[in-house]
Image (cartoon, rainbow, N blue to C red; front, side, top):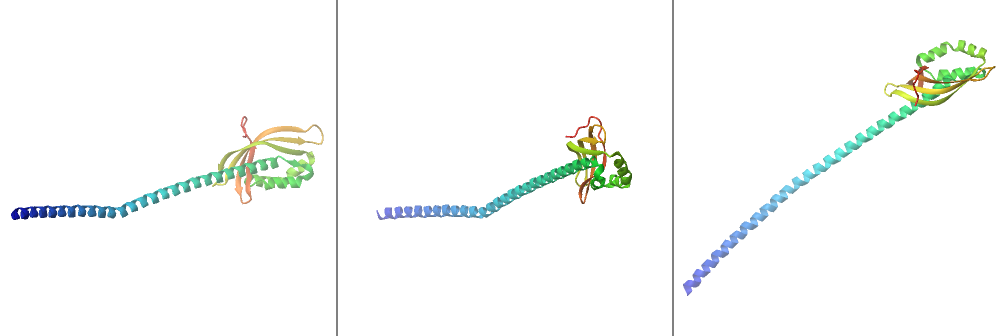
Length: 208
């Protein structure tokens, strides 16, 4: 009986040691896996941070491009509106002249023009003033419609087509009314857009 108990005790002791060894192995494996997971976490977080930063940079870059495109479009639209307004006013000025206020009218012509057209008006001013004074006519113009036909904002050049109604009143007879379409070339100066050329539009052309 004593020998049997001793054998049983040895067997139990061996099983206990084996279990203890297995438990140690399992615990070691779990701790090792946890350590590897923890080691990977900083790398994962860094990768996620890079992704977030990249997405933010892409979004910001996209917004900047969108804003720049909108700014360019707004700038172009403003330049177009300015050119059209100046062109319509200049064409109206060039077709308005009262023999009772010749100097003011011819001043307006010169102030509305630049380049070769301006020089032609300055050089022919006296002769034209004499002609209008003798005819004693009054010309008034009304813009019916207008459109920008071309615009080079960087070069400071633009083109306009303006439809207008001109009424010429002489001392005798009924006022003469004529509708016409004119093509004007504009040049941007330090004082704004001014006419550098003016002529009749081709037949069939429309303004706006």
